[in-house]
Image (cartoon, rainbow, N blue to C red):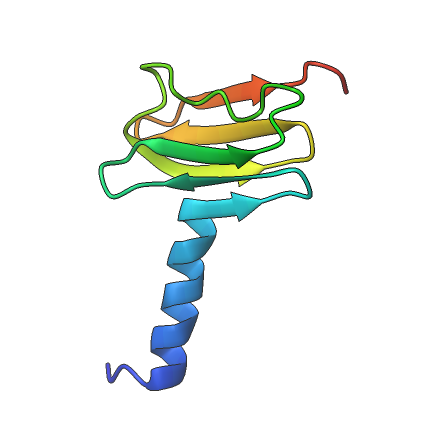
Length: 84
């Protein structure tokens, strides 16, 4: 299958969708070693991703008051607000 520029761009966007996510208050990303990086307001502790559990990540999601991540074994991590 020939990889066209359009296909390459679509694949890039799909891969970026897994490794970086932003909300109105913070951003979370996965570095090249599979560890989480987060920056922002941290009002709800949504940027507290420095614990030893936040490694071997395959996907991250930022919401207004929390950060979520999926580990390569399928488990989900969450930090931030517990309010719904």
